[in-house]
Image 1 (cartoon, rainbow, N blue to C red):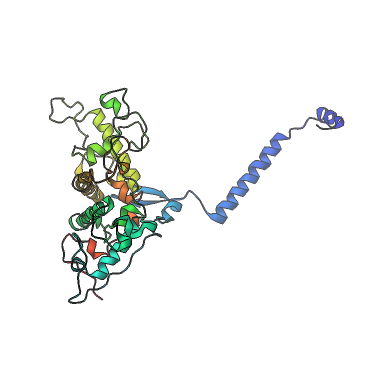
Image 2: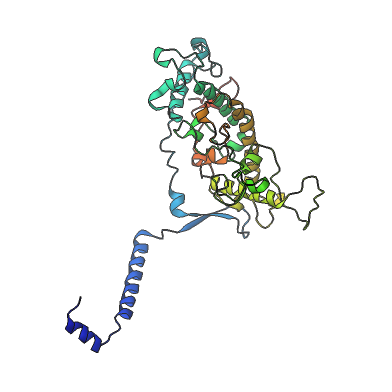
Length: 373
C-alpha cells in the first residue's frame, strides 16, 4: 500500500520503530492513569470494619465506592406518622366487618396502615382490590381472595418478629421490620426460596444434591439443600471436631458431606449480608464459642427466627396460595431466609427504622404505644 520508493528506502535503512513506539505509549499511558488517579481518586480503594480484637485480622473489607452507595430501595420507601388516638375514638373493629387482626386500631390509623401496605407490596393500580375483591363496590369484609388471607397472616408474622424476636431485629438499634423490609414494592418478596433438590434424577444420595451450580448453592458445586436442612429442618450446623478421626459410632458424626453442606450455608450467609467469615467467627478457631464475635450470637438467633417463620407462618399457607405462586419444581410454598430481608447488607435497608411510624406492627397485643408529642 506504500509507494515503491518508500519500501526500497525502508529496506535500505532499517529502523526499530516498535521500541520507541512502545516506550512512548507506556509513558503516555502511565501519565494518563496518574492524571486520572489525581483527578478522580483510586476507584478500587478499600475500607475495613474491625469485627474482632486488634491484631487478629478480623475485619470486613469493602470497596469504598460500594460502601458509599446507599441501598437503592431506601429511596422508594414510604412512611407516614401515626395519628395519636383521641379518647373515645371509634375503632376499626366497630366500623368494619371481619377485621380479625387490627380491629383495636382507630379508623385513621387502620386506614393509614392499609393504604401504606398497598404501596409496600406493589399493589399498583389494583390498590385495595389487590386483597379485597369487592373494594370497588365498597365491600371489604369477604375473604374471597387468597391475598387477603395471606396478608392477614403476614401482619401477624410481622408483629411476632418485632415483639418476640426483638433481640435480632433490634440487635444494635431500633430497626424492626414492616412489610417493605421484605417486599420492597413487589407482590412477592425477592430472595424467597423453594425446594429444588434432588437437582438431578440420574443419581441418588448426596450426588443428587450437589455438583450442579444453583442459586441455593451460590453457584458452586456445594450441596443445594443447605437452606432446607438448616433453615427449615432443625439439623446441626456444627461440623468441626478436634479429633483427627471421629468414630462413625458417634451418635451424630459430621461427614465430609455435612461439612460441604455447612460451607454452602455459610456462603449463603456471607452473600446475604455482604460480609465475610470473620464477621462472626475468629477463623483461627471456628470451633471455639469463646472466640466468636457478638454477631455470631445474633446470627444464631436469626437462624432460629427463620426456622420459626418458615414452619409456623409460611408452611401453613401451602393450601392458600394458588398454583402459580408455588415452587416450580415441587409446588411448595415460598420460604424466607437471610437474604429475604438483608438483601446484601449487614443491616436490612442499612438500618432504616421500619417501626418508628408503625407501633401497630411492633406488638402482638392490642396495647399499642404511640409516640408522645
